Image 1 (cartoon, rainbow, N blue to C red):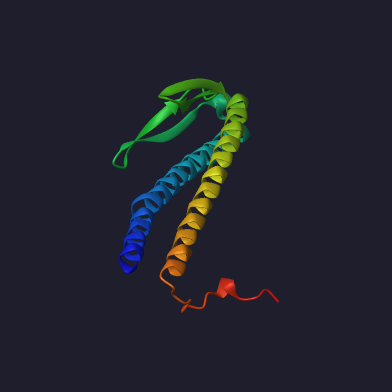
Image 2: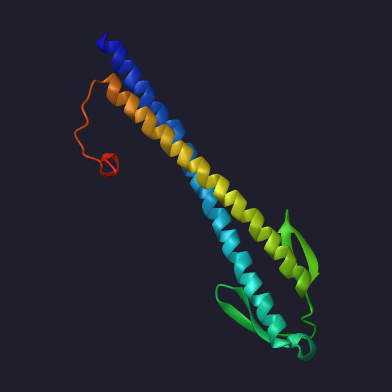
Length: 155
């Protein structure tokens, strides 16, 4: 009987460490990538709004461009009325500034909903890990030694 319990405990621990924790790590990495994209789109939105407010469309735009490794060159953009935005799969689309703002708002909504879904998925995986650990505790007939602040009565 003791060997059977020990085998089951080992299997459950292996399941938690090799499956659930890796799934949790993948979900959290995906969510972090979406947060980075979201930050980039919000930064782009701020830039487009400032371009519209500054009225640089008529006058042109002087800026510095990063060539990589923090090497900058000056650039003169004679027509800043249109910009190119990466829409996915390596495709860039030319937008006017108002069109770009509409696209960015829709993309931000899409990325926000994806991040919320991934947050729910990570919470579900964390709940599954806790459930398996509680099952292991019961299987081994262990008492709860650690007092958890979340287990205290609310009132």
